[in-house]
Length: 133
Image 1 (cartoon, rainbow, N blue to C red):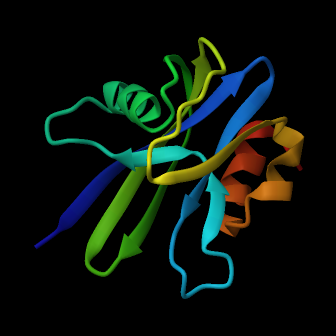
Image 2: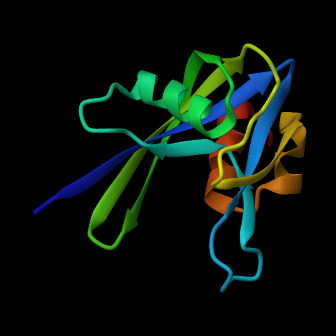
């Protein structure tokens, strides 16, 4: 039986800088807190565009509008194939109220992504999407 999980990622921009959020993963790893973008799963029957706006609002309190689809991604966990759509979204303000699942946040220029993000796959996607090479 084929199993899929559809995910969305919100790369939120405000005045030329991008919102990174710090999420706790696992205290059994060297760096349990990792910087990334807002992301999560789509609810059954939900449209991806509406899901990314909802997730950004739930996790950060920010109101956003979608600018463009930046790239797609996928990975396997066990027998579930996760497929994702990454959106660049424009924030209508910069007053962030983090959900309990997030630890910290920063607005940084795209040239500083490598200073925060350690996920090599994500960095590769960002380099191609934002011409950071």
